[in-house]
Length: 352
Image 1 (cartoon, rainbow, N blue to C red):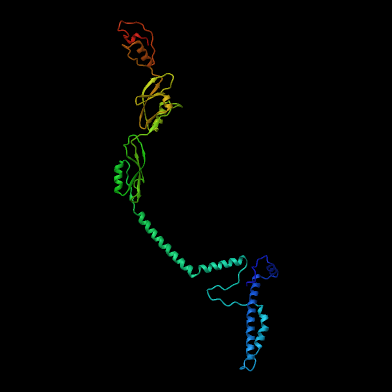
Image 2: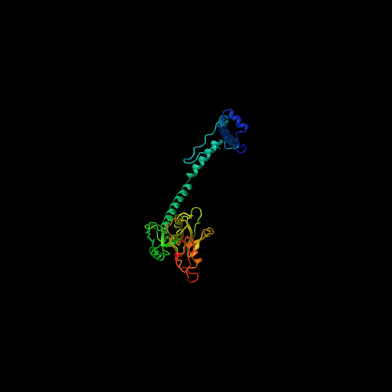
């Protein structure tokens, strides 16, 4: 088979065979069969010639060997040489020897046969069984080790630690083989420092031992909160006090002052820790601790009557200043009594 080159669909010989409705595989099979029979015929002819020479020269053989079988074989050989030889029967369970397949269909056929004989071989089946056993044993060992490490099926109910101090909650958690971790701290007015406000997992949950319980505790240091400005309608006491309440700051009215130009409950200024805070101060930024109390001085428009301050024994300038603070004005002085210099006798001496 070595002299035959590789056949492709573009070869002229392939094209001629297809035109004559002959398949290249069959033609190649016949050529190989002819070559095999030719070699056998030449071997038999050579053997016959050798036997003929031996029979003619041997002194022990008196008559020549009959030549009929040889002549008969020579006459029958050309007729049978062109017939394709029948391959010997294959042993059970083995693939029959075939000629190389041509074309895509032949290649796919060879690939399917090769794959089938590979997966049906004893070596493959042994390795497959060993792999399945190894995987099963590994799965059982891994499952057993995970159950041992994670304490599968062993859980303990979580106690309610809210309202306890951190020290007490830590002691009770360790009694149940738990660890506590402070996750966050929040300042709440009226709550003692280090009081448990919330917990994860929630109470009555079931978790495994040696797990962490995350706690939220109350902080003892209040955070600084910026006070809102008085612009944009914030000068109304009701609205401003609601904003302070959302920030955790208390508000109270300390006093009311008459002001005919402003609406009632308009904030005039604030007082914190004895210090007066004006609208300009709030614009620059004022921070107070959360939970503080801010006092307010608000306006009042309609009072009806005003209490007259006591002006006895005050100087004229002091009395005028005090009257202006009460939204009153100084009238005319009707009489001056002989009293110590600078001391007024009675309030009636002023026209209000």
